[in-house]
Image (tube, rainbow, N blue to C red; front, side):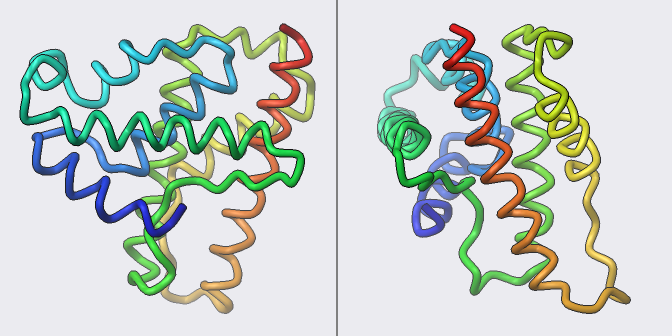
Length: 173
C-alpha cells in the first residue's frame, strides 16, 4: 500500500484537494468501519464538489476508487492484510509521523461524518478510538530513542485496531 501513497498524494495536490492521501484514506477507513460508506460523499469531501464535476479530477477519482476497492479487499481478507495508506519507509520519519497523525485525524473525521454511535462500540473499540485521538496529535520528539521502532509499533497497533473495528461493525450489521 505504501507504494500507492506518493502517486495518489501528487494526484490530490494536482486537483487542489485540501488533504493528503493519508487523510483521505483515514476518512475512507472511518466510514468503512462505521458501515456508513457513501462513495459520493467520500469523493466530494476529499476532492470538493467542484473537483468531482471537473474532468481534471477524473484520474484522481479513479485512483481513489482503486484504493477504496483495495482497502475493502484488505479488510475482508482472512490474512489480515490491511495497511493504512502512509508514505514509504524511505521518507523522513518526521514526514511519515506527520502523515500518520493526518491519517488518524481523517479516520476520526470519517467516524464523525458517519455519525457513529461510539457509545454502541465495545469497550475495546471505544479505547481504540480514544487512542486514535491521542495519536492524531503525534509529534516527533527528537529526544526519543528507538523512533523508527516506535513508529512501526504505532502503525501495527492501528492496523490491528482498524481490522478489529471493521470486523465488529460487520458482525453488528
